[in-house]
Length: 314
Image (cartoon, rainbow, N blue to C red; front, top):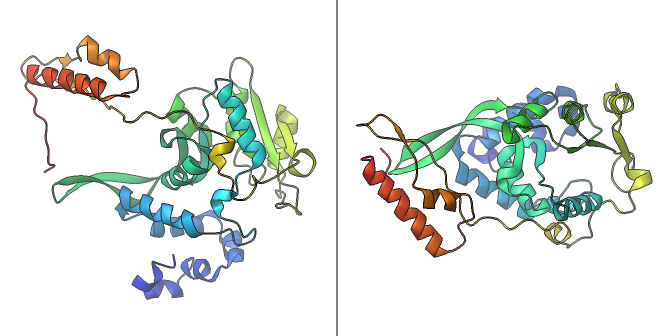
């Protein structure tokens, strides 16, 4: 916001931009979600994905929490990192879910929690592809596509993994995590729902919901409530300790292969890849030999159905 204001001085005379520039948190508590969304649209859109990710990474390199006076990347909860490490070594695959924007969380959670970008769920802006200077770019549009909060949470989870999660952890804040816990609770088979109660004003924060909706739901539906004050010996991971050392991430593939249907204009049928490349697609392309074999198979099939590789967009 501080970088945007000099380019458009009129923003200082308009809300919610003035409140953001002045650090007026009381305004946002009063104005609620619409004010936050208007601010996000102004600062998170009308740019390419690469531009936004660069800005997000620069922010995380320098920004500090205004109250706790620590880098945001050093605000990972120690018990959360320990739980992630335990689940990963036990064969579970974890996803990071947030009401924050998807791409900002990709910049944050990847380095803080060791969650790869493709396993992060968040609120999203609409996008479109644009061709500029012969290259195709993903352009962020000033319109909301999905809000990942409350009833939007289980929808986002289902869109990502197509099943109910076995374990879900959320927070007492605005009732925003109740729906995804109910979704997990409704699966056939065992499940676990962890609700973190922020009740430690000395080491973190103490706040409660006005309607007590999260704790009431926990009591009614059997969620496990975790008290930061009573149950956590340590809240934040030690300063200057990389979160990835506490919750090591899985080995990531070096590259991804995305396949669409290859249709022959002559035969009118969907062509499939030959067996050897199809087998390679189920594995990580770890070495150059595998990559070359895959490229060779794809090119052979492309020639068969009369397709051409386009080097420049139009």
